[in-house]
Image (cartoon, rainbow, N blue to C red; front, side, top):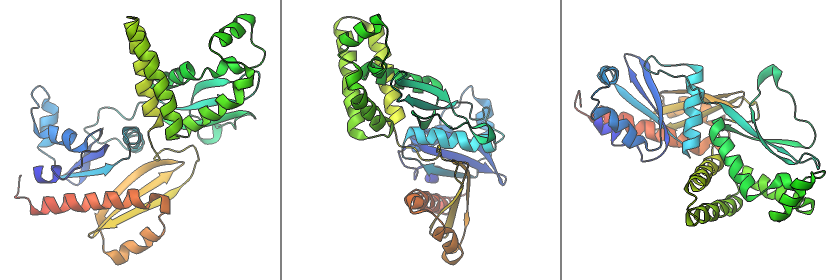
Length: 313
């Protein structure tokens, strides 16, 4: 088993343990190899895990493009089915960022994701971005955005005190379109725009430290980390309620994923010849080819390591 673990990459992703013909446990990691290897380390005081590890026959994993994507994938899979050794079931809250572009109500807000038949279209002048996983972290990211880009003070119809504060922040309604464009770029994960806000938050944090305002510095640091989370690539949860079939193949291992209502929620893998795999590969959208092939290559490498390992290793 440890030979297979050694083939896991030092990258974010989702892993699962199999034994007795079923999935025993599913989890996520910032570093797959380190996290999975920890189960064969010191588990003192964690008797339930020692029992589970004794039953593991196979390790499987999906490499993700960010920790945010790994969190979403774990969330989606656990919402579909919870393995017996998982104590939680993807309880983090999915949210969206609501950008109001209307002149008298310009601003940003965090709202809960609405799906299914109760989903209400956004009114004109309102744009939704995301989804993002974790309401607290998303609210921190939005607070950081508003600290550097005080969009709300570029609205029309502000009170006198709000206008005065806008002057202090060097913002007025003439800046509205420019600020909106920058916020859109950030929420669309444009690297240059994200870096602009990141530098602004770093400057705010360092100024607070210089003024010995350490509580404020800690708040800004939390906003900075949340913004980086918000801007990370993730494609396993979409606003569009689409259904897709995705497959990757390598060395006689076929990996298949299903996206339902915009959520990648099913992950299967099995032995399969290239001929039988061909229809699945042909149906895979090009945007998903690299993701699926990468997972299949890892699945084949883990299977090979398991086959070559002495029994019980």
